[in-house]
Length: 226
Image (cartoon, rainbow, N blue to C red; front, top):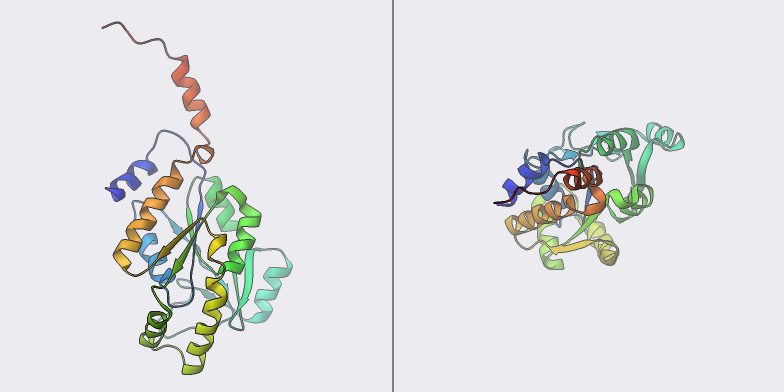
């Protein structure tokens, strides 16, 4: 039912400004998996924001698809020119979101989905204000978060411990988000995100063509007698 609603909303008669859906979570809580899954559903028409980062590429990652991997000099050049919508230093590496693709998408009524941390979320919200919808994803327990990080088998034991330590700092920011969900079941979490997106599409202030549509309705003649 939700998927059908997504398709209907994309073809609605009222013009709508695009939105930015931001997912944040501690590393291992599931934000990247949920982001990719939602972006792959064509009925929602979401465009995935590809961040730039100075972090080394993991074996499972593709440059330009998961991230654009650049060096520190290139990143600093983007930052100095104000070509980043947001940027942050996480685990000793820089991450950032190019500004221009996002602004063009929103103006054209297209939605973007971001997979960023709380630092980036604050910056994007400060710059885009009412265009932003934020969701924080919690793990069901810290023990389960550790198991997920270990099962991923892509980080050293030292890196896992650092991520678990940083997770507590990130979780403390949960109250800054519009929505919070506990990812104890991936399918249920995905359906919840679809429901959030459907509701946010219908917000009055986001439907920029609504005033004109209502005006046309009121300008129509009265109903014919039965």
